Length: 540
Image (cartoon, rainbow, N blue to C red; front, side, top):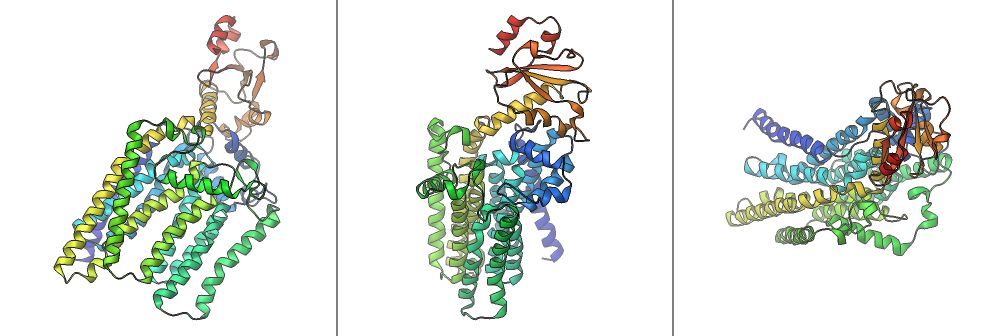
């Protein structure tokens, strides 16, 4: 078979999968929309609205965090989307689809798809595609799609997975290029999200594994350089944090400080919960994950239990086939790499005051990739070593087929589970805020033409607790000049509080609906001889 033919076959195998991932990405996220900025999203935009790129990316002082790589990407995101606020969720979907492409190619590497031909290549490619598809369909993606700040978690996930990929290649291909590529990616990820300093031990794990594979230890300058680079990165990281953020240790969730709130028992509990999340059990409160495990239907619980049986069988097949062959240092090193990566990701996201599902996304994705590794190690080079013995080759082929069938079965069983979890996204705390803000945008700038600089918004009661900051900044992201042209949100408790100059032509009056958690436009009633009894009924 010619190189041209091989290339054509691989392209024909890959392109349909990538196109299908695009369709999956948009389909599963079709109901998540951002039409107005609120909370941390609006707060971050306020800096973009007032700072230039360098001031935004490298602030002279921060509140406990220093994330220049993420801030640089955020600035570019704000520039690209501009005043089209309703495109932020679409932007996030594109980013998540791109990550699924990376996961797909990583999976192809793990399953040895490009080293196979014919039926074996198709089977390996299918497993790789399903891995990327499960990533896209996972309910851990709520934050990445539903928040502008979702770019933070998405980029951290992408870079962390690339670190894993580079170190995997370093062990398997025995080329220093991949190690230093992992070091570069590690540098980027710790300046995207400081949580991933936890990946530091992986570099020494693979260096030790590499030495065991080679069969000797020495003090060569090249080896010492490899060992020294991650230390330099960490020293630089903490030094910059001390200078800019005023503290070495990362800040915790919701403005807390990890050094003040850390509790070992609580951290262990959150770690166990994360393991349960990875295995399909929503153990948290509904406001954090959408729906609690106790409130899920019986069919979902049975599906999750059945998925455990499938996973146990897959692991059993992998262990059985592995021990039929010689267990070498490379096999041990690669298994430890995946297990340690998952453990580090679970540990570093369990030390704060609460556990959010967005933090489980990395360890869940790594677990899927680990299954791909198991499939690849159940065949590939091990199959070639025994290809001269037809009976063993047949057994190897059968094991590979069984593993593939079980992997497909696992995806089939868990897909409806993930989609039911996704159908409860609106119960998550920030999704509730997004729904309200979307309604505010729909009933004002989305409804009235020539809104900016012409109309003011007046909201009765403000039971949602919007502050004056939101009132001042809410319309600025919609304005290409970033000023809002004077249009703001004001809060009133009585119609007498409307200014004298307020009229139907320059005002929008909204009422909070406690039932639908949205806003009702009562401008017609207020300025058209309002029927206040009807308005009160609308509020109820």
